[in-house]
Amino acid sequence: KIVMGIESSCDETAVALVTDDRQVLAQRIASQDDEHRPFGGVVPEIAARAHADRLAPMVRAVLDDAGLTLDAVDAIAATAGPGLIGGVMVGLVTGKALAMASGKPLLAVNHLEGHALSPRLADASLAYPYLLLLVSGGHCQLLKVTGVGQYTRLGTTIDDALGEAFDKTAKILGLGYPGGPAVERLAAQGNPKAVPLPRPLLGTAEPHFSFAGLKSAVLRAHEAGVHAPADIAAGFQQAAIDCVIDRTRRALAAAGEVGALVVAGGVAANKAVRAALEDLAAAHGLRFVAPPLALCTDNAAMIAWAGCEKLAAGHAPDPLDVAARPRWPLDPAAEAVRGAGV
Ligand code: ATP
Ligand code: MG
Ligand code: FE
Image (tube, rainbow, N blue to C red; front, side, top):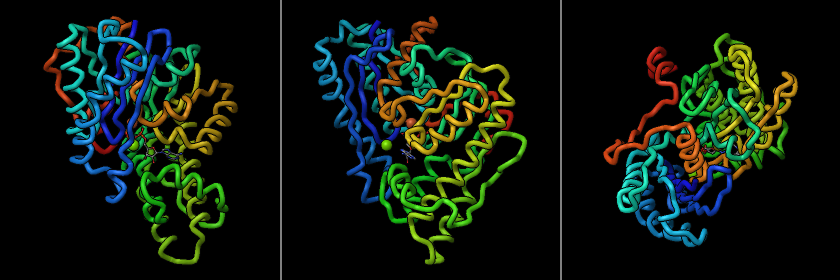
């Protein structure tokens, strides 16, 4: 089976063709960094317009790259949320139009499910259940993944996402946009112990996260004017990693039987974060799985793959009036019990 994936939930426009035996037949991705850089962050209206301009020609190009027509595609998987609603609507409506014109089924994919299952696209031997650390621009969660659509949230952030903390640190240090990779590069040149920074929620019982206090401390350290930016970046990254490892250790204790520790989402591209998680997994005698960097940040191959997993699990196609959703938790029960914050 061949699934076309469409991604447009933030500032990456992406289309991919993926087979159910894990071949990425073709994929294209266009970042909008240049459009958003002057504003220091993603401007929703600009993002939606850029997706609208680029998506149709990109669908054409990806089919041409693979030497296929829509006839050869078995299903259209489009991100239906969560994300910036204007962009999500552009991608979902494009998917609906393609599904309608071709008569192929439409699969409305949760963007977070795309991230959550992306390690299984990269690694055929990764079986359920696994403990997933999902660390992206908008989310920071620990989930037990038991199957397609079966997610138990063990922890989440009570304020900022980890990627957001990286981006804000980059902004404070004047490293520009997008921030995560820039902070990682600068941190590599600094001393992580030179600037004392807090580790919010370290040692607390439930594996939740908090990064707002760390961000404020980074701002104060910067404004003090006595620390080298590289030392602040290194101190921030180490504090964040210490929190992530402590919280993930707690989640491993709470998760019950899992076959692997898995990381996904944009921050999973960070080599220091990956290395620390790999050590933690080894200490627990667990496999560690992290997708290749290009599968960590937003892409359409992970959306197509989530579509493949849904087909394999026998999920029904979605109706052509399926709604785009700005919010769409992977574990609605946990969200309802704990409320919006935690
Ligand atoms: P979400 O998936 O929650 O809707 P998103 O799609 O914007 O949010 P992703 O594309 O998955 O998020 O990840 C982007 C985030 O990852 C940004 O915050 C970015 O700074 C961060 N990031 C990317 N590369 C790195 C890196 N090398 N080190 C740290 N953070 C990084
Ligand atoms: Mg982006
Ligand atoms: Fe994402």
